[in-house]
Amino acid sequence: MTSRLQSARQTDSIFRTEDLNIYYGNFLAVRDLSIDIAKNSITAFIGPSGCGKSTVLRCFNRLNDLIKSFHIEGKIYYHDQDLYASEVDPVEVRRQVGMVFQKPNPFPKSIYDNIAFGPRLLGYKGDMDELVEQSLKQAALWDDVKDKLKAFGTDLSGGQQQRLCIARAVAVQPDVILMDEPCSALDPISTLKVEDLLQELKEKYTILIVTHNMQQASRASDYTAFFNVEANSKGQRTGYVVEYERTEAIFQSPKQQATQEYVSGRFG
Amino acid sequence: MTAPDFATARRPGSLNRKPTSPRTLFASAMTVLSIFFTLLALIPLVAVLAYVLANGLSRLDVAAFTQLPPAPGLGGGGFGNALLGTLLTVAIAAVISIPFGVVAAIYLSEFGRDTRLADWVNFFTNVLSGVPSIVIGAFAYAVVVLTTGTFSAVAGGVALAILMLPTIVRTAAEALESVPNDFRQASIGLGATRLQTTLKIVFPAAVPAILTGIMLAIARAAGETAPVLFTASFSQYWNTTIWQPTATLSRLVFSFATAPYPGQQELAWTASLVLVALVLVTSILARLVTQRRHK
Image (cartoon, rainbow over all chains, first blue to last red; front, side):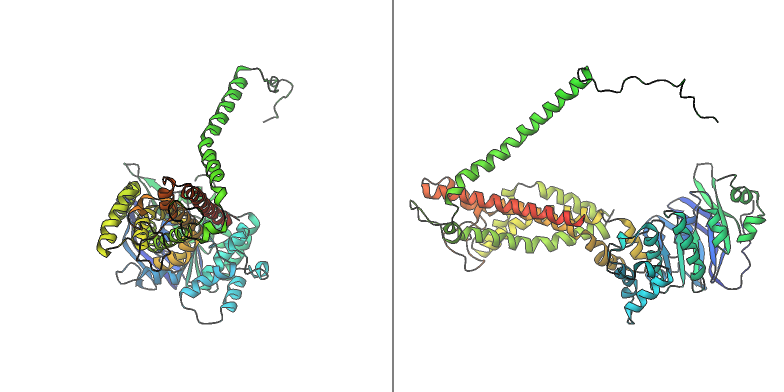
């Protein structure tokens, strides 16, 4: 088993990790992660539960900082800036790197205010009505809600709520959008809508998506990283990347036995 | 796999209820017993309300609300100054305790969670809520009355504020903690700072529950006698400033109920009725505020 992985060949990378080890206290959650994330692409993280996919995702916008025992070894570069350098302000990072969560989490405010929240924080001076409309259109939600922008975001259906959260993330015009199993709480039709949306969004943004749905990874992503998990002698389960390649390669001609077994549904 | 063969599957016995079976009889007996004790527990509440209502209604007239207490031995008059004094001291107490309490709760729930300091604040809040109210009154007497040289509405307000503080801190902290973490993460994920997240997302979501806690604290403070006994003290006259002895309803009841004059005793009952009504209305308002949130 190779621990040092070849990165998928890319020309322009947004994120680059070097020998990244992620810890919660003494517990090593993810080890030896060295990957490049390509610009204007969709990169999917797949793998069994507990293998650290979400943990890795949350390193890219420093959301793990909220957990006290969290720390890393190694480097994460964002456009060649060291993301964890002491002079980096995590709040600034999160303004560049937006996030959509597993469970739709609109604020208990109107649809309009949900979208306007981020831009207002940033002191957006332009036409807020137009920005709200644009963001909702980008999230393919405008036609559903254009007549009820004052309605509560929490009153929408699950699929609409998740698209509202995507619109909210898009409204601050980030560089990257992280998605942590964005469709796991949605029905198949809403899921397809979100997937179609991803294809449009990648024109403007770089997208990282964690998913348990392998069809989703194969349908929607350009690159796929397959994570697996290994227990050490003390029973601590550490995740690592088995294989990271173009999505077709992962699903049609995986190099590793474990990847082959996982994508064909024989394990995991 | 084939479908189960229903013809040979086990047939269940009769599903009908059997009212005479020992199990059903026992359940019925226990139900009756629990209803009986519940009613028994309600008797003191109903008795107090009925007694206060029966004795207090006779003097529930306009004069009771608008006039000063009568001279000893005379009938008529009212407790207008005491009603005003109760509202005044409680208002002073609210102005002091709400900002302190809510800000402390925000620290406990949002910024200091799991810190040593927060643990200590929590501990002392619990201790404070257990301090007898007469001790709080004595403290306010020493700190405010003795230093300013006069009984006053402010001294009473300070005593009631200390009494209200633990309730407000605890209910507000609970209200903030019950705001789902999803909202905090969403806000932080959009590039909000912790302060922005707290002020714009978490606090607004918790406001109804915080208001409920404040109302309940106010209702309790309005009825307290011991803290105002020797802080606001008592007065036969209208207040012109907040720095003079001030009558309150609870203190008036205390003095007049034991006075040897029927006129004063009647007023004490009516004042009790008004005090109960005040507390009841505040509690109901608190309920309504919470319910509106669930709509």
